[in-house]
Amino acid sequence: DGGITQSPKYLFRKEGQNVTLSCEQNLNHDAMYWYRQDPGQGLRLIYYSQIVNDFQKGDIAEGYSVSREKKESFPLTVTSAQKNPTAFYLCASSFAGNANTEAFFGQGTRLTVV
Amino acid sequence: GQQLNQSPQSMFIQEGEDVSMNCTSSSIFNTWLWYKQDPGEGPVLLIALYKAGELTSNGRLTAQFGITRKDSFLNISASIPSDVGIYFCAGRVRGSSNTGKLIFGQGTTLQVKP
Image 1: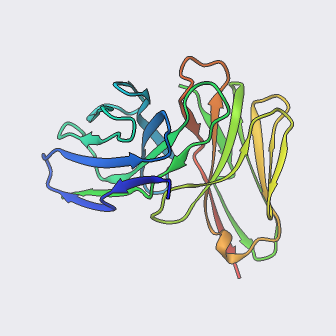
Image 2: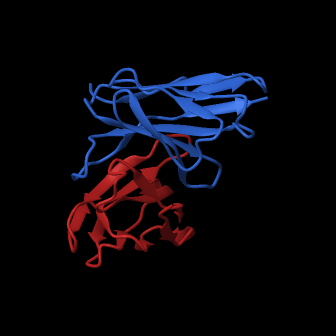
Image 3: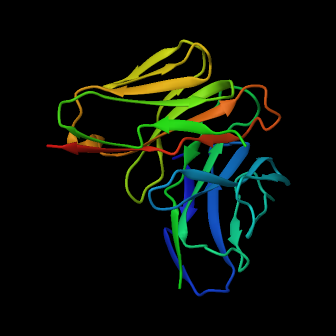
C-alpha cells in the first residue's frame, strides 16, 4: 500500500546525543516536510524539500539537520545543539509545485530526551 | 513569516450539536486543507479546497474556500463522540516562491460530551 512511514514511533535519547528520525514515502511525492509539535500547540515547520538534493529551512531549523539523497527518504537529525528537543515530530509529503496539492502525514515520532 | 489565525482555540460541546471553526490570513492562498489529529497520531486530511468560493462536503463535514482567498471555515454537523480531536487548517500561499510550503493554523481542540 502507498503511504508515508515514520520510524520509530517512540524514541528515547540522552541529553547531548544526536538522534536521527526516519521518514520514507512510496507515493512518488516530490516534496517532503518535517514539523515539530509541542503539547497543545500547532505544527511548526522545521525543514522542507521540494526535490532531491535540495532543501530549505523552515521557521525553526536551528539545532536540526536534514538530507534528501533519495526521493523516497527525508531523514531528520536532531542535534545536541537543539536546546529543547523533546517533542512530537511529524513528517509529511506532497507533490511539489504551485499546483493543487495535498500533503499526507506519517504517524509521528515522539522523541523524549532525558 | 506568514501566519494563519485559527479560531476558536478549543470547543466543548454536547453530542448532536453543530460545530464551526475558521481560519484567516493576511495572505492570499491558492489551497486550503483541513486535517484532524487524534492523540499521538499524525493529522489525517479531511477536505481539500482549491478554488475561491468552493464548498465541499465529506459526510457530516463541510468546508468552504473564502471568496477573498484569505479565509476558510469547517463545519461539523450533528457531532458524535468520535469527532473529538484537534482540527487544523493549512494553506499554501498563492504565487509564493516557496511553492511547496504549507502553513498551519494553531488548531482547534474539540471535545464532545456524550
